[in-house]
Length: 256
Image (tube, rainbow, N blue to C red):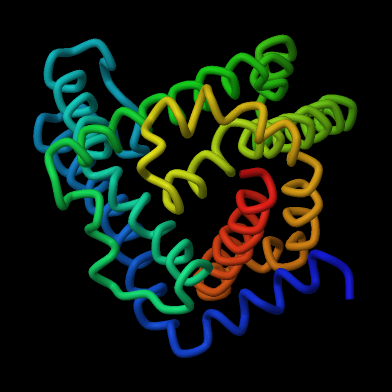
């Protein structure tokens, strides 16, 4: 049995009997994001800042800026919930048991809470900035003055835009594995390392084990394809995170 099959088999065994807290955890994350999004939309409609298609009348208006910035602030201050969802899988990998209460672990102390927010800002901003800078699809769209879904596009433009979208997706996956993947897992397994210890100082570990992370990710491609449907994603995401946490645990033990 190869390494990926063994890690995935161990993950499935760990998840047996622990499905309820893991699913509840990710449902909480999903509902939080949806709630913030719809509250933003409701406020923007209430302030008459959106048209019927959901486009801004004036993105620079004070009402729009305050509402959007308020939504981002809510996501930032509630972001430790996402770390909590990852921690559910980290606990499984370490202790073979987890509890829904672990979702709120990073809210248990002021210092831990703000350290987690700092960690999320570092990880999130680096990923966001680099993904925007390397967004091949956006560049192609501007050059061609076209987007996929526009009517009357030539076959050549469609082919170029599809190719650019695929390249952008591949780049985003690679950036995720370099800037987010191990960082989130290690912070969940060993939060005592701190925000910088799980980001900048972790990069040698990340690059050393990048190939292993990519290999495990690719072994889940079939599962990720099922995420087009909502229900399978509630199995695939916890399964992948648990398998990844299990892999990170063994890599950390071998490294340190």
